Structures are given as structure tokens and as C-alpha cells.
Image 1 (cartoon, rainbow, N blue to C red):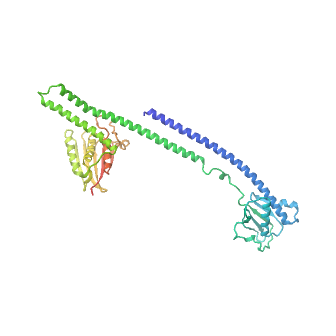
Image 2: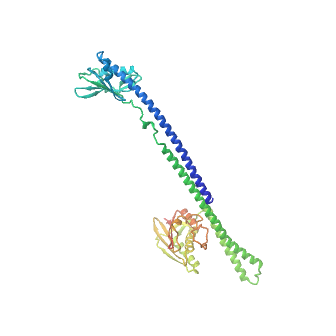
Image 3: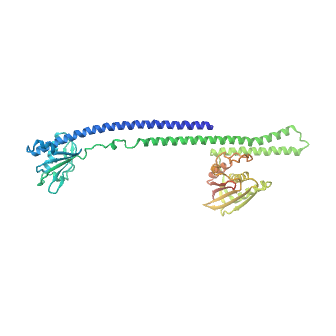
Length: 448
């Protein structure tokens, strides 16, 4: 997938998300408008119901005042006797001595006659104490019609109550008259939270998809680079073997056995080189499929490092490379696979030589810590930049060397090292600085 295709996918994805969000916003706006219209209608209906209720209460209270006055009250005074303080609170002026129990029974009867089924509470003004004495809360039920809210609090509603105080007015309060407020009629949660949630999910999915596409593109580029590099690496020994074989076929070496042996030796070495490269790729395939079996044994890491260092010194004789050992670990026995652990040390030394300009110098240190052995390989090479250091253990990845192409390899060395170390239950880390060098640190559990 090329860059133009990825850009097209990103643009189409962004447009799709914007379209979805616009549809959601439009739908929510329509829903909110419908709710507001329904709320207005509900408020109008509630207002009408409240006005009807208020009028019924006023008529019922005027009838109650008329009955209390027993025809001694002027009919013109009845309309001024009932005063409405709020939608659910009424005050009634009286000039009679009024017993609470009598008032309660009267209110129950008149409210029932006018089909008023709201729970109510009444109070009588006490002129002696300048206070209102409240009766119990009277609840309406279909079975018992009106009854006190509790039987244990009969208080002033008892007919045996001795009542000698003269009241000037009484009040009636309907505590449950008011219905839902406007805020209650709206939805409990804002619909914009839903839009935000949908947008977050879409953005997370889109970001994940783009990340996967970019990662796959990078893997594809790395694999293409690996194939090209492998083709070059395999082509060299194949060409050498082909040329040497052609010389053996076309020339007569019966009188020059030394030259014959030289060409045969070239073919042998190049064949071995080709075999090692193919074996390395096959081992990577086995590691990816978890098919590689490790043969664990007790290994003295100091002996292994010393032997590998001697081979390193021998191979670097012509270039002048040197290696310094600082083996300070007191306990150097580990449980590992000898062949693969040797390859790990050799790979790290080989990288130290490949990525060093001039004469390579390598230092290997060991120490004990955390019930294990730390093995650190220091070099004074070109180093690794911060943006590349996290990728050095990726499969097929090779640290760029600018315009130089003299560093050979498949980009499998450190990937192989990391997989084997983790398979052995160990850890690997790297510290590096451009122009100064790199340090690769291994940790393996020591043998108990």
C-alpha cells in the first residue's frame, strides 16, 4: 500500500466520521426540539389542570365557610373569605370558634363532593399564641378515602381534644400538588454525551485502523528491503560458486593442482556461507512458529565469553580490532542452550565490529544482581539515534548507515538475540548515543 492510498483512506475515513457526527447532531437537535415542544404542551396542560384544581378548591372552601357560618355569614363575604397564597396553599378567614376535628371532617366531606383527591394538611390560627396549630397529613386512598398518614399521631384531629382557643382563620396546604418541574421533564442525561461517546469510539477505531495500516506499510517496506538484501547476500556466493565451477569445467588444471585446490576451496567456503545464511533464515521461521527446541545445560558464562573472545581476536587480527574482558561476576553458571547462547555473544560482537568506523574496540563486562548474571557488551561505534533505538530488535530492521552500503546482514541478528534471550527467561536492553557507541545488556538467571 503506497502513500497515496494511505492518504486516500485517511481522508475518506475523516469524511465518514464527520458525516456520521453531522447526522447524529442533526438527529439530536430534532429530538431536543421535539422534547421542548412536548414540554410546552405538557406545561400548558398542567397549567390548565392546576387552574381547574384551584377553582375547585376555592369553591369547596367557600362551601365549607358557608356551612361553618350556618347562614349567619353574608353571601358577599364568602368570596373574600378564601384567599389563595400559592397554587397549593389557601387561607380562609372565619369568625367562629372552630374545633380541629370538626374542620377535618368538614374538609374531607367538601373535598370529596368536589372530587378533590389530593393529600392535604390543614392548620388553625391560634390567636392566643399567635401561631398556627397544624393537623395531621390527610392521605386519600380508594379504600378508606381520607385518613391520617399515621395512626399514632392523631394529635389535634382527636374528637376528645379540649379546644377553647378562638381562631381567626385556617389554612389548607396540598404538599403533593405540584407535578414534575421542567428539569424533571427533560431527559436525565444530555444527548450530547451520547454524541461525545460515539465520536470517541469512532476516533479510537479510526486511529487504531490508521495505526495498523501504517504499521503494515512499514512491515511491508521492511520485508521488501529484507528480500532485496537477502537476494544480494545470496547472489554473491552463488555467483562466486558459479564462476569457480565454470573455471573448473573449462580449464585444464591437471598440471596446476594448486590452482585446482584453490578454486575447490572457494566453492567450499562460499557453499558454507550460503548454507549459514539459509540456516539463519530457517531458524527465524522456526522461532516465529515456536518450533525451535532449546537444549538446556549448565554453562559457565565466563568460559563461553573467553572462548568467543579468542575467536573474535583471531578474526580481527588483520583489522587490528581488540576486545577487553571485565568478568566480575562471582556466580557465572547459567542454564541455557550452548549453541544459541554462543550465537548471541557472537552476534553482539559482530554488530560491534560492523557499526564501528576504524579499529573496533569492544568491552565485555559481567556482574551479579537480582539472582542473575548481567552481561554487557560495550562498543565505540557509530551509535544509534533515539528514534531508532526502539526498533533495533524488530525483525528485518537494520540501523541506517547513510549512503554507505558496506554493512552486510538481513536485519535478523538482534531480533534473534531478543527471541532467544526471552525464550531462556532472560532480558535484554540497549543504551546508545550517536558518535559515542552502544551498550547491550543481557540478564540471565543464575543456576541455583
